[in-house]
Length: 139
Image 1 (cartoon, helix red, strand yellow):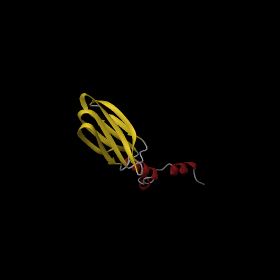
Image 2 (cartoon, helix red, strand yellow):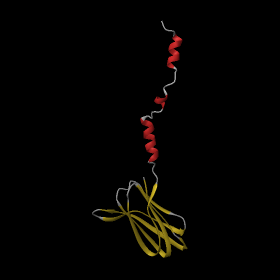
Image 3 (cartoon, helix red, strand yellow):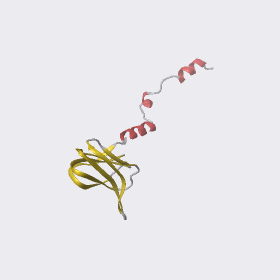
């Protein structure tokens, strides 16, 4: 007949070293998620001198959130921006519009669930200024 204490010592012994080194499925999944963390990608960046209006277009490569950041400086002017997408059969359509004083701070136009591939930003100014912009996607 075996002793009750002997069974207890066998049950509490440590696992072999090779068993502890094997990763589990959840470890692989957590590593894959950490490696592909979502962040903002700059699709297009530029600056140009503007009097009147100008259009800049780009293609969305990835991500479902699109935004345009734009800014200008000085002379009590106002920057107007229109974010547009291109539909295959019906052409360009406005998604969002916005305006901001030319004080060096960003005007941000953001759209969620962006499904189109072609996008455009149209900039309008009533005085001659340099406009700086970023077209970005999140994903």
